[in-house]
Length: 68
Image (cartoon, rainbow, N blue to C red; front, side, top):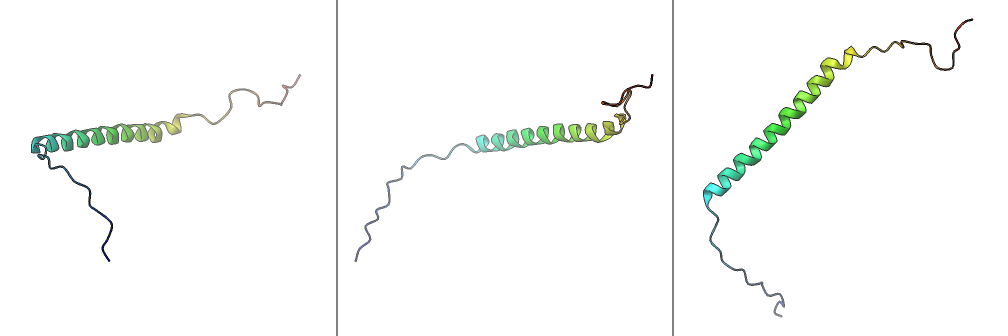
């Protein structure tokens, strides 16, 4: 019994130039490095300035009336 599957014809094409792949790799690497730098700066900023927020309220608490 023969198989009914027939491989599709694949068109041969010249491979793209090597320099295109090299620069694509460099560009993707630089973009990922820039994203990592931005995320790192953001996280360090959050960690360093998280303690600057004063958790004590400055005014009376809601629902509590001031003494007469």
